[in-house]
Image (tube, rainbow, N blue to C red; front, side):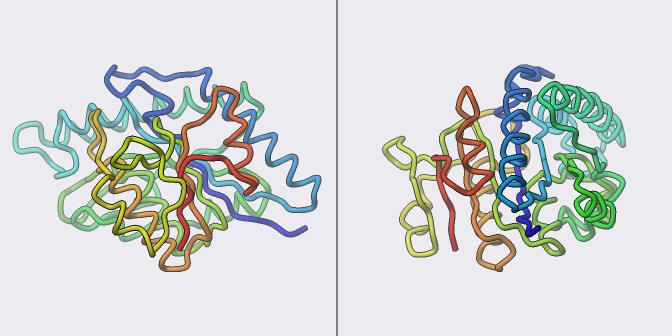
Length: 269
């Protein structure tokens, strides 16, 4: 059976209220999980196995704590290593709840903790051990990663966004499709409308309209997301990427995972 490597991130802005500390939206996760399961089952019936790597953002769990402790810069002059402990504790709670909601939707991902397998140097993810991730994929399982604090050779520790971890992961695994679920219907233009397609010939036209996040977000918001995705596409490490707002029934997420649509903004090389 042939297969397609697909990376799906359920963004922190989709699964939490970023302005309210530790506010996980269980019903959204359950519906999304059901449609991911449905897409994988449908692909299998057509003889095309989806090898899914699932990710989730930190939302109002990690970002609020990271901003409070200045965790991107590492060890704080006053708080010391306290930020690392607070963020790790918060993300562990979030991840456990996230998995429990996934189970209610019929999806059974296995967390591969970024803190245990990744390392940075001055804020850049230099190493990501993909052995366990690849082993899970080969056995039909769903590895799960998430934005987290990771060790840093210069700063002591730093924040690694899900996109930064995806970039490191894609050095070893090429993804046919990347799907990013956000709180906006894709990338919005100057007029507030969704830009349906962005590619290397029109990216400069739209670059000025792409803004960061309005809520606490230490990893750069939409602008940084688009930049990282284009770097992957341009380097041949992904076939396409789609940024979308998940519909109430998550039908568009189902379509995006199968590569048959999904709305939002499609990014191509």
